[in-house]
Image 1 (cartoon, helix red, strand yellow):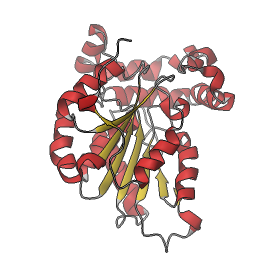
Image 2 (tube, helix red, strand yellow):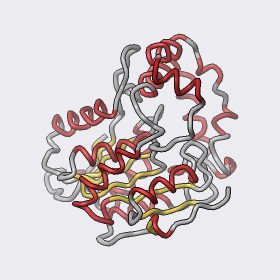
Image 3 (spheres, rainbow, N blue to C red):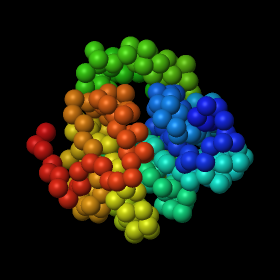
Length: 294
């Protein structure tokens, strides 16, 4: 999905906002952001990553961040968008992808909005870690063979929210129906990504990001959007790592929401737009943050 203000591509000279969705999601998660960006004068590109939404999928192999970077480069090239500078917005797995993509193209990426980035997720158990490290083919076989989607209930989707009564029921139904009707595709994609991505230990990535990207873009180069009650990327796991590696980088912290911060974070769309349209740094630096007792 490619949108320009006023529908006029030829007249547009500004940066292009590129959206990276989360694991087992699709471009639909950024529908509201796209409308607000275009309304504010920003062009937007949304892409279904490999195995997601309407993009192709298969049962075999693994999917890596490099595959996703290549996917985005291919779309940008095929659409004739190479001349635009980029603003990146990514949620969860997409938040991790914003770091990889900005690191791959620091000369093109002006700003990064990383929303609950999946770079220090909840630690795996020893059997889980061993399976992914030493038997990735078996993991992919299990996810291809076992219909895990049959165990997904609407209540399990509701549990993803801190205050589900405040969420549009259509959003919950959409996520539930995706699991129900795209079960084979989602199972296969999950198995291929979980064995190809590192969601748990990304110190080296952040150090490279700081030295090769933030050294060029400075404090305004990235803004993190985090939730205190995130149970997928725990706040008390993530913040100490970020404080240690990139202490001067800025963040906005949201309460009363879990991992689905893009849907549940109060005013988050407004805050993302304020960051993208600002010429100065926004938020509080990690150096000044403390980790609350949760």
